[in-house]
Image (cartoon, rainbow, N blue to C red; front, side, top):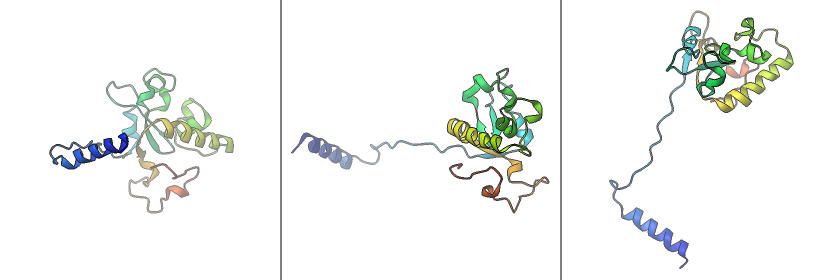
Length: 162
């Protein structure tokens, strides 16, 4: 019998001989559930309050960008983008105050392509999703938007988002 077979046989005998009390399984904790953010909720996570994470929304998806604190933290170069939905600013690569909004009205095709690229290649690739902005799925009065279909939204792709 080869050494590999002997080793596997011994492991199998040991496992079968152990009682349930002796076997310890690795426990993987559940991930935090995502949440819905109003503009007011999101504004609290702007990097100015020590101890709170730093959140930023792009295309209505809220990301925890805390691990990029050197870019997004208080007094950092991209701090203006956090604590809000900065979709337009990301699309235009702008820090202009008038671009710090979710509104994509009037963006060029090139800017929309840039938005999709940065959304997928940077934010979805690097930062965990912690929630969604309320305007993405609610009517202005706070009631559920019965007609909302993420896949029907302009410049939105549901693929791999969840």
